Amino acid sequence: MSLGADRQKDIELVRRAVLDHLKVHPRVADQGHAPDAEMLQALADTLPQLSAFGTKSFAAVRAILDWDHQLPSQFYLLRVLASYDDRDRERVEAVVEDRDEEIGETNLYPEFDLPDYGEIDASESYVAVLRAGTARVEDFRFLSHWRKQVGGTIADLAIKTVTRHPNYQKAAASRRTDGLGGAVVIGWAPPCLANTENWAVEIWLLTEFDGHTGKARVFMVDPERKEVTREYETDVQLA
Image (spheres, one colour):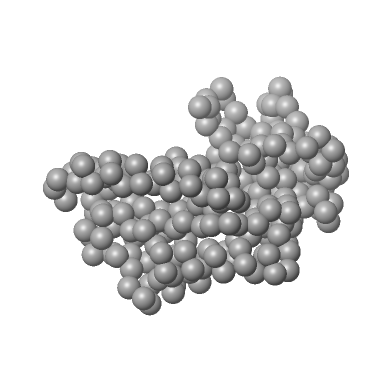
């Protein structure tokens, strides 16, 4: 992860993107939830301190308050699109502008559905799921396309670390179905999702599966500290 001055610069870029340049989806504004100065501050404060992976740093950050395609909305999505360089920034800006145009062309009546700002890939992409009209985060996700690119040496280290962990061994031993396989490396996870200061490797152990749905035990492994820093259970569904 970026360190020292670079890390603080990344954190400040994210905060400024929310405080000074937040794009608000028309359907959020239509429902009277366009954030005022107090709400902008609350949104900036509720976000984790985000900084770039490895030796990278953020060149630019876009923040968008998006809607959930429900009227009235139950949730809003605070999207953070962080770019490592000007080329990625320009690409993100072009896609956002195209989406703006698409939204503008179809925004005829306030009860009509409109496109959102999803599936805009940046160097690092984050989504905070918020209860509508509040700064309360219900879920936080890291979605960037490169997260699965965990090097072989680091992946092997993470597997060795997790399989030695007592809770992993307990979960593996408690499975009542054969053929569920062993530990699977899912990808990189940012520090805020791994409860550690470093980027971690996310590993799943399938504990139940009926061919369509099941459950998995998730382990976050800090490869620098060589320890499991967080674990929880998640639902699994066949795509």
